[in-house]
Image 1 (cartoon, protein in one colour):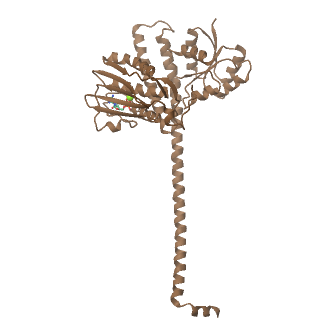
Image 2 (image 1 turned 90 degrees about the vertical axis):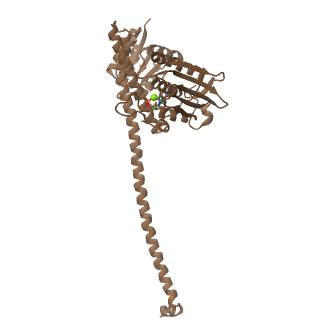
Image 3 (image 1 turned 90 degrees about the horizontal axis):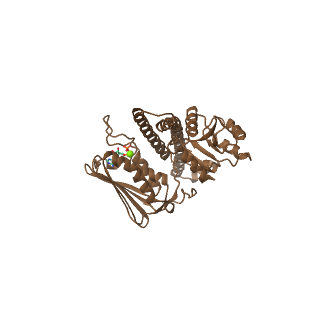
Amino acid sequence: MFLRDYMVVIPGWVFFLIVLGIGILITSVTWALILKRRVEDRTKKLKMALEKAQEADRLKSAFLAAMSHELRTPLNSIIGFTGILLKGLAGPLNEEQKRQLLMVKESSQHLLALINDILDISKIEAGELKLFPSRFDLRASLEKLIGMCRHFTEKKGLYLEFNITEGVHEVIADQKRLEQVLINLLTNAVKFTEKGGITVTCTADQKNYIISVKDTGIGINGNYLPLIFEPFRQIDSGLSRKYEGTGLGLSISKRLIEMMGGKIFVESEPGKGSNFTVVLPKNMEGQDEKESSLDRG
Amino acid sequence: MKKNLLLIEDNEYNLYMMSFLLEKNGFDVKVAKNGKDGIMLALSEKPEVILLDIQLPEMDGYQVLKELKNHDELKNIPVIAVTSYAMPGDREKILQAGANGYIEKPINPDTFISDILKCLKDGS
Ligand SMILES: Nc1ncnc2c1ncn2[C@@H]1O[C@H](COP(=O)(O)OP(=O)(O)O)[C@@H](O)[C@H]1O
Ligand SMILES: [Mg+2]
C-alpha cells in the first residue's frame, strides 16, 4: 500500500537510476575489494621475496666472513712457519732451500691479499664496512708507501719519483684504508708498466689533498675505462690472462674513497700510460658526521 | 730474566708456531688450548703477559677477558688479543673489552715480537 504510493510519487526513470546506482556501487565495491586483496597478495609476496633476498644477503656476508676466518687460520701457520724457517730459527738452510721458502712466502702473502680483498668487497656489499678516522701525517704516510714500493720498481728496472708539495701535512681519514687504496694504485702501476716508471704527486687545495699515481705503462682502452671500477672486472679476462689479480682492487678503492667523502678517477691512453687521481678531503669528519667518530685517538 | 708468557690458542699448529717463535726470542711460554685451562694456568703461573685468541671453543676470548678482569690477582696482567676474527670494528670491541693490544692473524713473523713489545709499551 505504502510502497505503491511511493512508486507513484517516484517516476520510473528515477527508480531506474537508483537501481543502476546501487548496481554500480555494489560492483565497484566488489572490484575494490578484489583489487585490495590482490594488492595485499602481491605486497605479501614482494615482502617475502625481499625478506628472502635479505636473508640470503645476510647468509652470504656471514658465510664470507666465516670463510675468511677459516682461511686465515691455516694461512697463519703457513706464513708463521715459513718465517721461522727463513730466519734460520729451526736450523740453518742452504741457498736452494731459502730460495724455495721465499717463493712459499711470496705465494702465501699473495693468497692473503686475495682473501683480504674478498672479505672487503663482501663487507662493503653488505654495508658492514666501517671507517675509523684518525688524525695523521699524510706526508709521512706517502713517504712510507713509496719506500715500500721502491723494492718492486727497482726489481723491474722502473723509476719511481715523487713530488709532495709544501702544504701536505695533517689529514683526518682512515689511515689503514687510505693506505690500502694507495698501495693498490701503486701495485697496479708497477704491475702494468714494463718500461719507464711511476710518478707520485700530492698537492693541496683548501679542502682537499689531491694525490695522483701516474705510470708510463700499457694504459687502458677508452671502452674499458668506465668498467675498471666495477667489481670482478679485468680487461684481460681470457684463459690466457697475462696479469694476475682479482679485479677487486679498484672497486674496493673507489668505495673506500667515496666513504671518506672523496673521489677517484683515471685518465689513460693505451700504450702511453695511466694517471689515477684521488681527491681526498682533509677532514672526512667534516663531510659526514653521522657515521664517523674520532675515538681511536 | 725470561719474560713469562701465557698463550691461549686452540689451533694446534698455530699454538706450536707461535710458542716456537716466542721461545726462540727468549720468552718462557706456557700454553693452553681453551679458556678454562688458560684461566687456571694464569692463576697458578701469574704470567707477565697473556696472548689470547678470540675464537675459542666453549668460552670465547671475550668471556676469557671478562673472567681475567674479575680476578683481582689477574686483572692487571696485560692481555694481547691475537685474532683472525676479522669482523668490522673488532679491534675496537676487543680493546674496549679490556685488552691492551691487538695483533691480527696471520701474524707477521718478522714483526711479531716487536708488535708484542709495542703493545706492552702502549697499553700500560
Ligand atoms: N695502472 C694501470 N695501467 C693499466 N691498466 C690498469 C691499471 N690499473 C688498473 N688497470 C686495469 O683495471 C683492472 C682492474 O684493476 P684492479 O681493480 O686493481 O684489479 P686487479 O689489479 O686485481 O686486476 C686491471 O685488471 C687492469 O686491466
Ligand atoms: Mg690491483
